[in-house]
Image 1 (cartoon, rainbow, N blue to C red):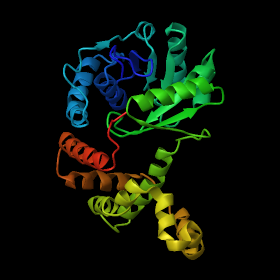
Image 2: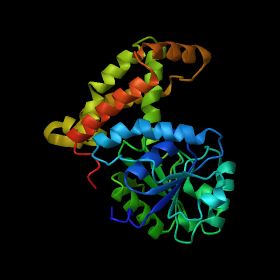
Image 3: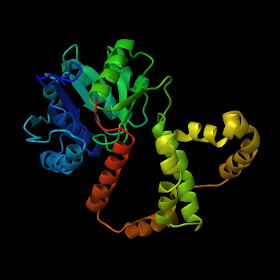
Image 4: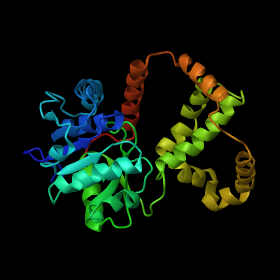
Length: 317
């Protein structure tokens, strides 16, 4: 970051929508020296954002960022048109409803400066669909973080059909300079990559717990002491490539692929839904995690930071 509080040419960021994702973005932007305008019409938004920023401060400090007077450059403007007039970046985190996003982006485009970078944190709606509301759809790109944005490195940068190469590169460069690990996807796909992987794995997690094979805590212990550790250092493809021994991926597929295909076929026949018995079971077992949400969040953040340090994934950019 330059001395005048700029990251890749961004001085002021407007965070639209101050839920968990938006407030987390705001905390990271502030810790990186940006001025932040939060725009959210909810009456208690200021109290909620201040609380979230304060909660994120220990993790940001542990990552080596300066959290002194963290909210000194934080302002609030409920009127969206006014909130974006001085913005170099708009990071939109509104409801996952296309009609709402269309309304917001029409207002943003009509009032933001011509050089403002437009990014949406949408977790599944393609940029192409959102950008139909814009006169200049080439300005919009998906900048989808993995929760919580102030901590987890990944940002999926997903250009739409009309997104310009310049917009995509500006977004990638900004998130990289912010200390993130941006990954530009080669094709649009609903849900992007990380959420699709998470959904597929979680489907089987819910099935195993609802069938009584394991409890939620037991399943979490299995994941964190096996594939969680394995994939943290190598990822699934490299892990299976190594699992093939000297023959690598080719040997893995020829010798173990048939068994995996059988499991895929069997799993496809299993119905997994959040019906009332399943929701009651999961809700009841969640009480066994042994802490409040705040306590469990703090524990998760400490462990996440330790892992990131071990993997050299801290905010060194």
